[in-house]
Length: 356
Image 1 (tube, rainbow, N blue to C red):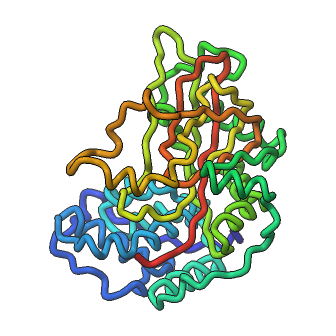
Image 2: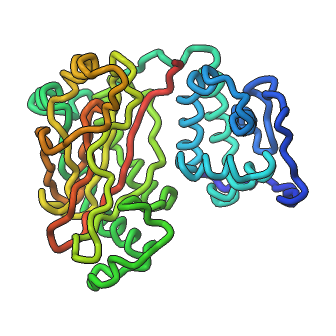
């Protein structure tokens, strides 16, 4: 972003600022704070109403896509943004936190572009498809595999130098040494199972802006009106007697509303990954049968509660720099690493802004 600094006001003390549980919803999405961003104050107010049990669920669902877009475009990440929203005692302090995640500056043109997207959302003009930049980015065999299996492995979306920089970043953030296996198991507050709470860094942002990655998502979605997620990275070291794979195992990231909608998820291997090296795993082709399967479940059954030993779960091996992208209807997950080196990945996704 262009380094145009937004002047910060003095934030109130966390002890002095008290939130009222009967604070009204902002009059509209154009209710700005000192950053001049639409929707941000409305998001903060919705969280306060939710904490008080007074938020209409339909409002949250209708605006979820918009809120998620703001978290990602502002390089906040979903989990850090929600944590800050719940912990900041005032909207002013939340704005200051947002500013800090953007190196203390927001470019006016970036603010204007985001406000235009917010306005388009409320004007219900966001679903208009636009031309795909490179419809030939996927081959005929790629398309056939996508339609039949529901996932793709695209090699060499990153060069090896960028892969090494990104994997070294993960080691550095965790205080580990790639050449010293005894350091791979050090406790670190940024590790949640195999997920590393690292969302916003220049190296990760560089990967998110690789043109080939965007072109692949645009081809699958058949539009270039997409935004890139600000997601985290993963570190899955080899199992040993005092450290066993903690998960997450096989699952869906779905609400299971039928029919299950089209959506994508993806990751990039930052290290060469063998099938037994904690590889990404999925059940190929399940996107074609998920609706019938859901309809067959007994009433009240939890779709996530499965004996995955009886499923056709396949680990996907690939070289560093490979993009693995899958239909969100595929059950998927990580797996135990029984090799000699960690599996390191960056998670990412792209999606359109839509009203639900």
